[in-house]
Length: 371
Image (cartoon, rainbow, N blue to C red):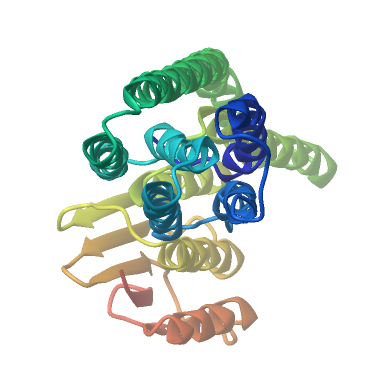
């Protein structure tokens, strides 16, 4: 049974008071109080102190205090037979059965039984007193067991109520998550069919206007509408991800970036994955996504409509990403701007590296981070 320090402190004080009140009428058996009986009175009062003054976590102190109280009161009872001394010993027995383990309580009860048997053997004329003490000892043990069982039932009831409340809360959370997942699915359908179709139609309209030599103002209006549609798609994706409340894989996040690039430029963009995909740290994943995002931004700025290839490689201790845009003609100066410079600093902080520069097929950005 779990030790409850607050209940023991207040309950112990009340139990000690009960024992003193119960033992008071027994003084009629030994006459009025005499100077020799005052030590026993003090012992009866002190017997409650080990329980009342226990710290929050007594550890071995409670069993030791109860054993000492039972032994001392038993010794005094054998030296100076008194019902008050027996009451102190019975108080220790009650505390032991009520709060200690079965083995510890059995040891203290054994002390009490041994003392009663010894007193009877040494003074067989006090048969009635011995029987009364045995009956009292039995009542003490039964009362302590009853209180212990009652406390156990109370704790079991409280635990059952707590578990039922936890189950109800889990069901409420599960229902809320299911509703959020349903809304996320509906938003995803709208995103896939309506907004994406709108963005593609606007892209087609822009190309048709350019082909037919429409005014710059008309083309600009369509381009602004296309940007608004793409921004709406991006915000809708964020809303769906928030509603789902589940982590998005790195390759899925990169693919979303490439989808946005395709909608913006009508240029091909593809993702290749090498190795076995796995979950990586938040910082490493953010560095990879930021590098891809910055690379696509630079491609839009310096090589619009250039095809893009992204290669994501998983190895045992590293994650690598390569962004290659197949731009034609010379690479504009200042391509590696402040964005990629910041990505290089972030990669170095993570123990990785970032390299940028022209290659045989275009501009190449390569990021390596531990993961």
